[in-house]
Image (tube, rainbow, N blue to C red):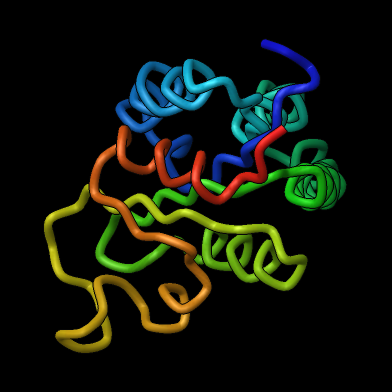
Length: 161
C-alpha cells in the first residue's frame, strides 16, 4: 500500500472474536485498501503490543505487564487517529462498543471525519429517529449499512489529493 495514501483508522470491536477477525481482515480492511486508502489498524498494532503478554500463563508476571501494554495500545490508537484522514467505525452490536465510541469522540474533537458502518439489523437507537446512540450518531459524517457504501462515504469525506 502506498505510504502516501490517506490513512483511514478502522475503529470497532471486530478483533475480539475469531469470526470478527476474519471479517475485519478478510472483508473490511481489504475493501478500504482496494479503494486506495492506507489502513490504520488498531487490531494489527494491538496484536504486536499484547501478544508477548498473552503468551504468558495467567499469573503475576502477566498481570504486572498488562497495564503498560494497555497504555501503549491506547497511545498507539490515539496517534493513528491523529494521523488519519478519516475514521471508519463499525457500530454493530446491541450498543456501540465503548472503545469505538471513545475513538469516535476523540476523532470528532480533532476534526477528523467519521463514517459509521452498521450492518446489524437490530434497532439500538435512543428513539425512532436514531439508528445508534444519538450522541454517537451526531458525530458521524455519514452512517452506512454496507461496506461498499461506507468506503464510498470515506471517499467523499477525505480531501482529494
